[in-house]
Each structure stands twice: as C-alpha cells, then as structure tokens.
Length: 272
Image (cartoon, rainbow, N blue to C red; front, side, top):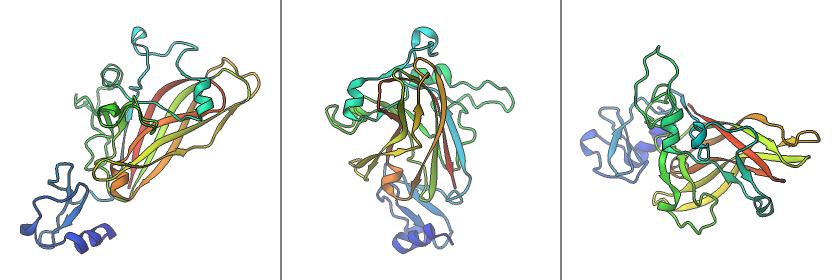
C-alpha cells in the first residue's frame, strides 16, 4: 500500500458507505471495503481516482503566449518581442509570460491526422491526448489574476492571464516545464535567468509564498547584440502538498540588462 493511501486511511479511511459528503479540496479518502481512493475537488465533492495515484505520467504543450502579434498571424517578427526594460532591470523583476485563449485557438492545433485528434479545444496542442491519468488539463487559458487578487499587489502576477494548471495533480508528482523562448540581447555581456515564477496557495486560495524556481543563467557576451538565440530550458518542481497542487505558476525571466524576449512554447510534463 502506498504512503498516500496509508495517510488517507489514517485520517479519513473507512467503508465506502461512510464516505463524507464533503471534505476540503485535495483531501483523500480510502475506502477499506471497496479499495477505492477518492480525492475531493474544488467544490468539496468526492472524485474516484482509484488507480491514478502515482501512475501514468503524461504531458501537454502550448504556444499560446500573450504578446504574440495578432496582425502577423501570431508569429513573432524578426527583432521584435516582449521588452524587458531598464525599469525591470532596476526592479530586479521576474517578468512572467501568460497564456491567451484566443491565441490558443489560433496556434495550438494538431498538425497530424493519425491518430485522429479529439477536436477538444481549451486543453493544449494535443487536445487531451498524452495527459497524465486523472488530469483534465495542464493549462488554464481563462484565468485572470486581477479577477482574483488586487491588481496593485506585489506578487509579480499582477495583470497576467492564464496559468499552468496543477489542480488535478497528485501528491508525489514531479512537475517539469520546458520553456522555449528566443532572446535578443540589447547590450553585450548580458545574463538572462529563466525561471518558473511560483506562488503557493492554501485551500482558501490565499497566496502564502512567492518565489522563483530558477534554471541555469544564460550569458550573452560580445558580438551577441541584436542576434536571436533560441533557448529550450527545463525547470522542475515537486508537488507534495495542497499548497503545491493549488499553486500559481508561469514561465518567467530576469535579466541584468534590457533584452527582447520571444516566448515560443511550454511543454508541461508530470512524472510519476
């Protein structure tokens, strides 16, 4: 029996007939008579997740980054992109890159015919194929930070839309995000630091801790100004508590000089 099931029995175990009508989001209940495992959703209702715990890894991908130019079929033009300004440098900011539902519908479309795509949008490029077991989506394109928190706050998510969605993940999952982006240095000897900008949240959606999960910094020396460099950076995080499952996260970068960023895609993988 897994540690997770032992934990569930310790706190909420019993026969299926005694299944509580409601529990806090993310709590689990293992039935001792039918050997089923239930996880309570955001409405406090039980969902049967038997067999899905710590099994069936999977992934999803999206290219629907906010800022892609609508007047160019959402494709980046040479030398143009999202500016990381001197004010960002002075503030030591991690600039986050959100997702847009309109760009998702325009760009995240299967390019193959076999196997037949599901045709379901709002999930990612693979339209639900390849997702981990028990996970409905790894992207939330409709999430608007300012609808949930003060736009005058200091979390770094203010004004952002979309998020990497972890709500269907399980304790013990390992999150890996490969962030693909172009960098166009504006000043020689520039260091760019890719990251996942991450906010843990409790069961009431209160943000408890905000921090960067950083990757190896990338240095652009002499002769790099104005050139475009593709980066495919992998960043990982563990999911081991309710605050991780309920976390907010988006790809981000920090730089010690002004740069232009062209975010291209995010491959989000859950490993079990």
